[in-house]
Length: 75
Image (cartoon, rainbow, N blue to C red; front, side, top):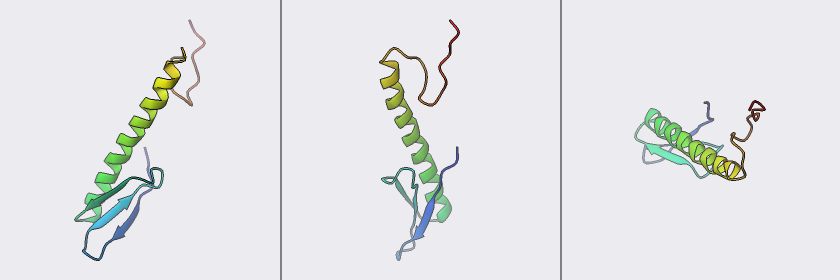
């Protein structure tokens, strides 16, 4: 999975890393690499939570597949 990450260094020397796909997600670190690692982990967690919530709604409607996936016609 690839996420876009926007970096910025603050006046205090800390780095921030923001994932545009999840605007509310901003991670901070002492180094650019640390902020990037934290942002990647948070983005993966946010994606998993989003898929879980959407998937539960679809499964609750009697379907058994993820959004975007083609449903199986085999029975």
